[in-house]
Image (cartoon, rainbow, N blue to C red; front, top):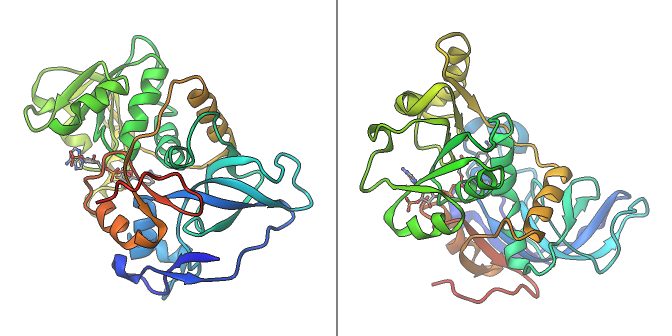
Length: 327
Ligand SMILES: NC(=O)c1ccc[n+]([C@@H]2O[C@H](COP(=O)([O-])OP(=O)(O)OC[C@H]3O[C@@H](n4cnc5c(N)ncnc54)[C@H](OP(=O)(O)O)[C@@H]3O)[C@@H](O)[C@H]2O)c1
């Protein structure tokens, strides 16, 4: 099969398309013919081995797993003997650690995978899991409900567009912060208020929120503190400059009534099933910026690394339904 491989850490150019052996499913795995996958920020982190400590998990000198790719949507091609939930021919979507930048990939039946939402294309289904599961994990303890308010900073990214939709579904009052070009998009996702950061600094407009969620790792507890209500919560997605994030989390445990927390993501089947329900009910949609064919993975990766994508960047694989609108 064709797969994107890499043998050393480095810039997007270390990625190349190669013929490799097709994986065979273990007893509890399904083999998926991948129709679409994505390039996300975590793929880029693995490829660069950044931050440095990730080498502990993925290989000190060189990558132990040659094929990147977390999100996937496709059709079940084969099942292991212990699999009971899926059958050959099922259309599925989900997220895993590695291996989806390929024509076929295996995923554990009990992993973060479910049947594809009805009426959603493969491209769209490939582009929903990572952002939504990160946002859901980060906001799990934010107690979002009617009467509570949240500000989402970086609302136009993969995690941000997900957070706006999930918070709106929970009934919270949502304020989204993004730049001018994305104002209409985030409004269409359900934001009650939008702050265009090119026009206004939300920390200086006098408004306060129960929760401030930095969905893009570009803000900080210190700068957001005055925008939090008493007892408010700052939620970060990132370790922050010089990894100060965990220190701030610890400090706010003991000092003051405004707290900071750092979101830790666990991809679970339960969350994918929750997302599928939301999509089937018309309460959540994919936001896709660009689509590239698998062989253009280097261009796709360069674009993701600009840090300017809106929502998600899809790679179309065998039978993918991309529209070829990449530049
Ligand atoms: N906690 C976890 O387990 C976990 C796992 C993976 C990733 N992450 C983190 O999740 C975060 C978000 O990832 P993502 O994939 O959603 O990012 P992304 O899609 O690459 O974010 C890009 C978006 O952010 C906006 N943006 C860039 N700079 C900004 C700024 N200074 N102020 C406001 N908006 C800005 C961009 O819009 P404009 O530039 O057009 O405004 C663009 O729409 C990252 O911090 C990443 O490290 C966390």
